[in-house]
Length: 384
Ligand SMILES: [Zn+2]
Image (cartoon, rainbow, N blue to C red; front, side):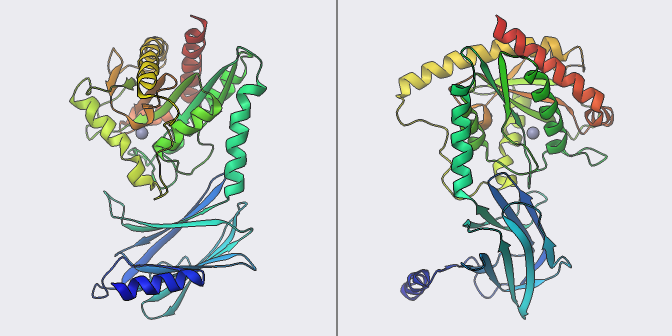
């Protein structure tokens, strides 16, 4: 134990970090796949593994590269060289150095901060190793840019933040024809932003602009930075029952769900952090330490009341586009709705696991009509 710690301290002096996750007696892992996800401020590389592995990482300054050596691992995937077309990484290489030893080389376009963490198997996901390369300067710049939006917009402008659920490693629910929730909610989100931008009193922004994962708490933080007056998270429902269909609207509940189905749905949506892979970096991003609990509770209550009002408009307008699963809005403890600073709602646009709803979700015209309906509700909400 002491030797291992000494070794780790010594190695950290020479710029190498060592993490051990597997006793050496376990069988060697096979690397079965490698993927990457490009975000505005980071690139995330994910390896699929049949077992957990030991790994060591090191960084090279010139040219900037990140090396990860996996011990007790062998290459099974034929993807050994990937070209990446994003601002941060240009190439991903996997090399079998010796039996049970693989090196991952990430050729970077600039120096980046590295965060590596394993994810345990979950549902249909195998063991994964995540290499998260972040441009901290860009991250800060984006954050400051968001914070400036409120000041830049004319007095009285309402800020709406639309959150397309899931993304990256987390596809969300999947339809019988393999339509992924993360893709259709992004499309509706983009159309909704276009619709809202036609209104001079409203400025609308997306939490996620592409196919990458953002932890749930981070989505609230982004909305807060924009100074959101309203936050809407877009989703598509999934069920084992292929006949279940229709749209539904949810608000936060602090005291328990409306019913068992609503509770199960919130549990499922909250899994996003596990499936998408929230990093080990602390995620307590949503709370402001300068606000007292009493003030936060007051804000939360006011936001909740406002979200109920908004939910009524949504039900009325969405009903014109798709049948409703339930006639009333429902409540459960969704992590993404926990921001106390603004009214937050979650819309399940339709059931992606129902053939007819899946077909609708894929149709540009349906996406457009759904965006139009939500935009109408938002305008009514701000008017009254
Ligand atoms: Zn979802």
